[in-house]
Image (cartoon, rainbow, N blue to C red; front, side, top):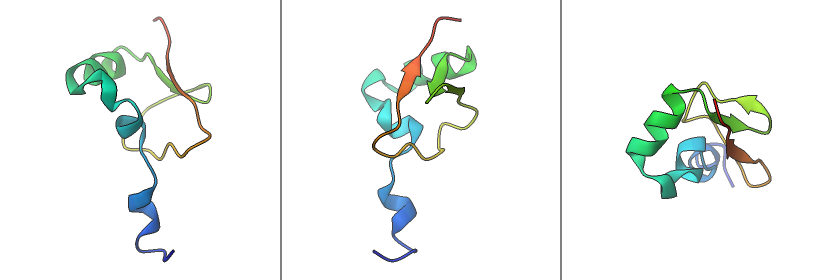
Length: 59
């Protein structure tokens, strides 16, 4: 795998939560309820490779 294609192959927080739908993702993000491995998500397009755990927490 080359460095040019690697970033495109890594899922993002947004893509890992896609089953919720864009509107719900945006709502949860705005409310600060999306966490990745215990850290609040500040960028939905941040890498979230296999093995990481995106979760929604109550605000």
